[in-house]
Image 1: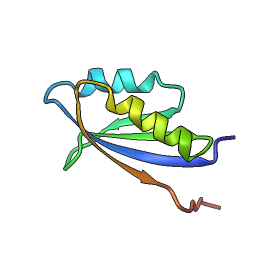
Image 2: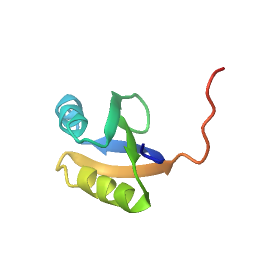
Image 3: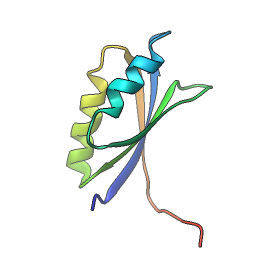
Image 4: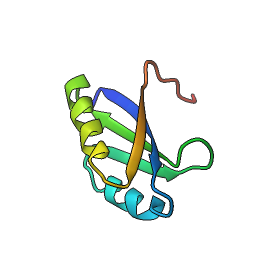
Length: 82
């Protein structure tokens, strides 16, 4: 089971949100992609085995031409409803 969870906040070229989401969703390490309103355009939830895999995953996401900026937040601790 993957042990690293992260959120990648993305800014994309205007009008490319849906196509970019579809492309990102195809990556095996991606569990969810959301279009959001505010400072960022997309939030990508990813799971990887380790930080090295996380680095590779974020590099892959950054190669998509419509993505203009990313910021990655690594989850430190998770809490779930009981």
